[in-house]
Image (cartoon, rainbow, N blue to C red; front, side, top):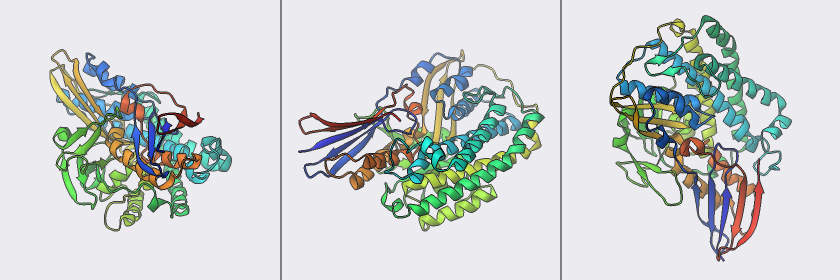
Amino acid sequence: MSNTITIAPVTRVEGHGKVTIHMNDAGEVEESHFHVVEFRGFEKFCEGRLLSEMPVITTRACGICPVSHHLAAAKACDDALGVEIPPAAKKLRELMHMGQMMHSHALHFFFLAAPDFILGPDADPAMRNVVGLVGADPELAKKAITLRRIGQEIVTRVGGRKIHPVTAIPGGMSKPLTHEERYESLQEIDEAISLAQLGLEVGKSLFEKYADLIPNFAVIKTNYMGLVKKDNLELYDGTLRLIDAEGNELEQFDPKDYLKHIGEHVEDWSYLKFPFYKKLGWPNGVYRVAPLARLNVAKSISTPLANQELKVFKKLGNGGPVHETLYFHYARLIELLYAAERAKELLEDDEIVSKHVRVKTERKEGEGIGVIEAPRGTLIHHYQVDAMGKVVKANLIVATIHNNPAMDRSVNEVAKKFVKGNQISEGALNMVEMAVRCYDPCLSCATHAVGQMPLSLELYDAGGTLVDVIEKRS
């Protein structure tokens, strides 16, 4: 008797997705899939809006990474209008971006991922969360909150609001950074760097604890894509580099040419598309983005502390890319340190308080593309604009979409290894969820729809009869 197990949706991720696990008569997993079943409509209601509204409208795609949409939209607007923003405006945008990176990476690792490692994958789900983490290590939780707060305060001072910032506009920034705001952030940034280093030490100790699990958990060999600048890790600008599973460069191209290199495959069981590198075709062209990919495509990091950590990280690949999916968390912590270091560099640059943060813009017909590395990977905003300055077409390719094929494969690998027999184990269920959480997916970003958050795992027999259900809402 064959069965299908459904996890709907996966917990401790942003948005609503599900996993189906198809088992054969022997109680073994034949195949598994990661599904996103929310309807994607955000791009459609951007049509007809003024281009100047896009940096504010698109932040509403997500409350976790609104800065990324804000900046990608502003960059697309600049491109459509053909303007070069002042150096101070570019530095302010990057500073806001570093604040979000600190906030988002700290949030994901300490509050969404770490409970699986600190409390254990098989721990009681009632405690395997941020509440349990606070109980297990209250000092670590306080430090994680402080690190998030420092990043969020940078966003507030530069972006005007903690969530859904408003200051990045076509042509630059709507306000400069005051000397007082700069001073306040400078007073905190060294603490952020120290806390990021502490986070790395905590992470590395956990990776050592789970050294036997890591090489046996969702290890898939893929291509990788991310922004680089002169071989350095880059999060705001640069060119897109694609490498293969052995580390050989496949392509390096201007992000504005993404349509020449990225194709989209469609499956009938998910609203999310499945991007791939065109020259290799589907499925050989599947690639990954986000922290693991960015550290694989970069050869160095421009800040000293993070660069030292990168050298240690690179050794895990034995001369090639690091393919172990659980090391997404390691890469995320290195980027967290880089963001804090880079924020300090920007804050110490006197140009950051220049009042020249904006150039004049005029409405015109055109097309604009803005690309940025969001916490979750490469984010693309592409707008077509008419002569009245209205958006006639909008295309958003979000990091989670890039990673969709890899998440699907990762879920399948974990399910085959850890889901056995016809009895549903909550621990096995969580291991499958852990594979998805490695990617820190933002399903609301990817689908632009409001979803529900309970998790239920359903077991059906071959005739489609519901046999068993486990449900949780945390």
